[in-house]
Image (cartoon, rainbow, N blue to C red; front, side, top):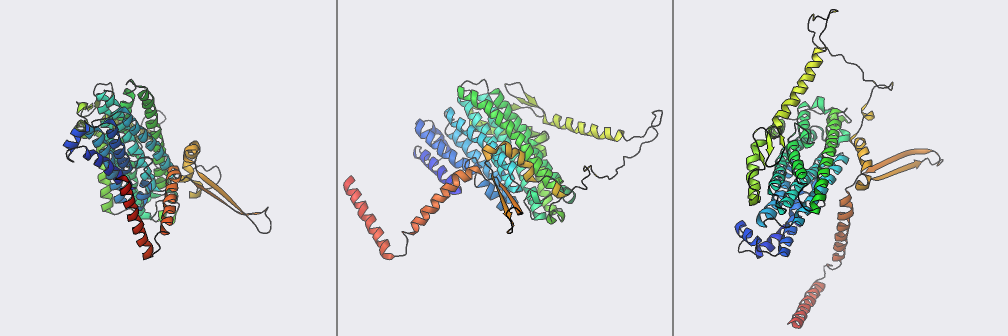
Length: 518
């Protein structure tokens, strides 16, 4: 996949350079305005394919959920937080800057690729029980949201709505930064779990809250951010993205009138599935009872690992509370991508206000309100423990006491880890809803006793949710390549006489072709 992406990028850029005086950005920018529509579109499509593969966009995402589980966690953090973002940079740099925008269908294609990547990525993340594979598919989902913003910016710019284009591109670039922060935290936290337990399978984890409290708390911060809920940094960028899509409904064009409401629905569906996915990851992996001896023996990671996670968590909190600190840089980046975008699309130091549209959000005030609400609830619970006399007068404050008691178990006895939801069973209702998209594989094997086939010895149930695109697209391609390689072996038998014959007939054939054509 890496070689395929590089080949596509090189083809596009070499075709571009062939029509320019040199390979500098200034020369390419000048030549881009003079290219024919066919050449411009060919260059953009080749570059889009190459950089989309780097970004892990569907259907070029197959490498990403396979690479992340095998790589060391710090390398996974670099791949997910830095490398894939450069794929977005390449699309924006070539499409907006060097080619100067382009027709609307370019950006509708980018928007559709982003929408499919967002929904498909989060569905696969919701189904898997491998923690790092889950985070890998989450990367596909988040880069899909970024591509929705980039595509919407291109659509608005082609329609002359440059203020909306600036808002959509700002939202996309802010989500790139937010994703880099919370995905770094989540992968480092997954590495901490792997270091302590040796496990990535959520079905074998549990009970880490008491044994790894720091890792649990920091993973919770990353999960909150990835779920795009208030107090999480992704909430702000997704709110801006939704604002750009909603305000873009009046933009002229039948395609725009269809795609913008669909894009809003995709963002909303993706946000809901992301919440379910990270509730599964956090609740079953950290809060449930331990399901293996490795989880029972887990201990907190070393200080150096906790410091790394803490720094990433600090970046998430800062971006969630004061996102305005990166807005000037994003405005400059958007202006560099498209000189027609003009003034910054988002203004304000504390309260973010949309330029030219009614809409504002103060992450700091939202955070303060939520914290005040939590404090009020805690204070109310403590006040409820104050003892009173018969006349209603306060006698003295008693410290709230705690008493251990068994949970209600319907008379079935104490609950065990085998009675709790696993990651697989938690995702099963979602899998039923999206059966037609996921195409799960199920099989039941019943083994009978030799004495009588009416007596059952054992029943084995298997369920697997494979990557449908990988199964339908890549497996046939790999089978074809394997068959071609097997056929090629028949040509290379080790016979020097055969190799000399190949050379003779090749030269003779070339001479015949030259004689006929000249």
